[in-house]
Length: 362
Image 1 (cartoon, helix red, strand yellow):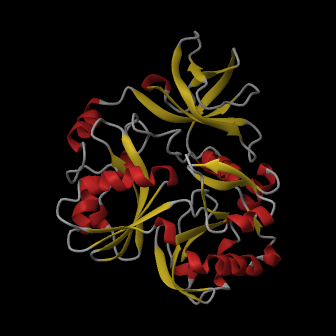
Image 2 (cartoon, helix red, strand yellow; image 1 turned 180 degrees about the vertical axis):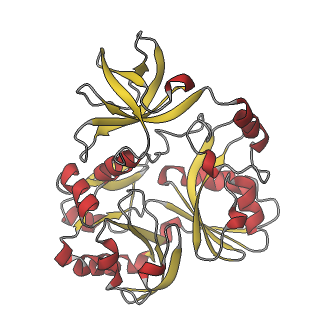
Image 3 (cartoon, one colour; image 1 turned 60 degrees about the horizontal axis):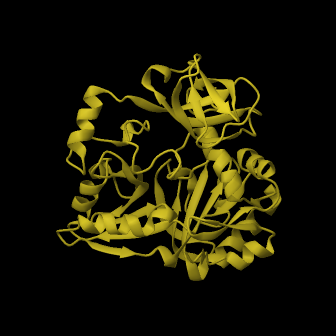
C-alpha cells in the first residue's frame, strides 16, 4: 500500500522528526524523546501535526437526519459552534469508527474521522445517505494542528482576536488566525492537558505552523510526535481505534454508553439497547501495574488462579506515574476499580489493579 505524505512532511524531516508509516501516512513519531515530549505537553505547550485525520462536510436539509441515522450520540442537541464525540456503530454490535461531529450552523456539519478509516467511513456514511445530503470529503485540503498543554491558550491568543476564554470545552469558533481567515479554533484534543485544535486550509498550513512556533518561543514550545500522543491519551484512558475499539467491540463494552443515546433510532440501536438492558459480559477497564513491568497490546489478562479473563488493548509506561499502565477488556466481575488482575508479561503473571479513569487523575 502506498504511504501518503501530509502537506508539511518536509518540514518535519527538517525538524528532525523520525518519520514512520502510521494509518497509511508518513508521520513524525518523535523529534527528541517520547518522555520529554510527553512532559512538554503536560507542563507547557506542544504541537502535533495531525493532518492525516479525515474531514467530511455534510450539508443541506437532510444533513442532520443522516448524522442521526449513522451516529450513536444525539446530534440534535448541538448548538452552532459546538462539537460532539460520537461513534459510528456497525450492524453487528461493533464500531466502524469513533469521530467528532461539529455543528457549524443549521444544515452545515463537519465530521472528523480517524485517518486509517477515511475510505471506510466515507463508504459507510454514504450507504445510508438515501435522502441526498450533500457530502464532501475534504480530507486532502485540510491541515490540523493540535496545540496542547496548559500554556497553549496563552500562546494562541497572540494570533487571534477571538477570545479563547469564551470557547468552552468541546466548542469552537471560526475566525482569523495568524492572518488567515476562516480558521476553525476548537477547544478539543486527545491529551487531557487542555489546548486547542486548529483546522486550516493546506495552502496556509506552513504559515500558521510557523506563526504558532514564533508565538510560543518564550514558552519553549516544541513539536510533538505520535509516541507522546499515545502515552498522553493512555494516561487519560482515551480509546484508540484499532486497539481499544474496533468492528468487534460494542460501545457499551468500551465504556462509551455516554455517547450512545437511545432517544433516537440509529444503526443497530435496537440490539445495543437490548445489550444495555441485559448487561455486558466484558468491559474495557484501565489498570495500573503493582508489580514492575510494562503491559503491551494483546498480552493476556488473568485472575489470581491463572485463568484468562481478557487481554490488554493498549499499554505503556506512564511518564507521569513511572509505572506501567494500560487498558484492556476483562470479564464484568473483574471490572470494578480496585479488582486485582494479573498481566502475563513474557510468561510471568504480574500483579495489577483495575483503576478508575483517568489513570493520572487519582
